[in-house]
Image 1 (cartoon, each protein chain N blue to C red):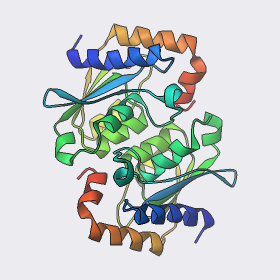
Image 2 (cartoon, helix red, strand yellow):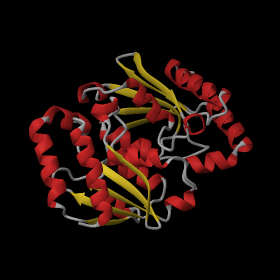
Image 3 (cartoon, rainbow over the protein chains, first blue to last red):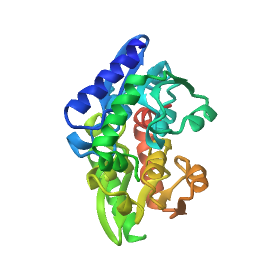
Length: 145
Length: 145
């Protein structure tokens, strides 16, 4: 497993251990993680802190030039909110753990010039599937259904 | 001025008074504000709390059925992040104070079935213009340029 997808997966496992939705992300700038985070719906009662958003929030305010040299690693295909955030900040590349549990806005990202890489991680998929079996209502709420 | 755009504008003025970016939003469900907020970049050092996001965060976790009966009022045309959030949660209608200071993803929202209403508020425009003159760097950072 790629070391940064592994770091995102560690965030997902941390969230799962807290009773939360197991999706994690890391924002990487020039080979260094500048923000790591995971879904905070259950932990903080937040509808906006998806894994990707939490990673960006934890990276804090960054100049546009930094975002444009970043790669975002995330365990699950990014939803419209997280994809819009990637586009807002001009993050040029996203590496995705899996998209079998949920297919986000990968095509929209590509039409906006974002490079989308699929890691096809079985670990990410299995953890997500386990959570969906255990807490389907929380998962549905997280994706607005 | 429509009373809910006025409520969003009050949020924008509150942010301006705090030294922040003057963009405010309210989420309205069946004629009642269930979440109000404003841009928190300067106040909380947050890259994700745009006015719309802050309003949704303050509304807390809501079932999908509630979002689908909501209207989001916002003083400025929603950026890709905030537009993606509207689409994620299936919010069917957005009322926008102005889009002369910044044109967001209005067309994308419309292609996804969201009703977009332009309020053409001169007050929203003037306050935004005043801020952009005073703190252009903060404004550019907020829109990723």
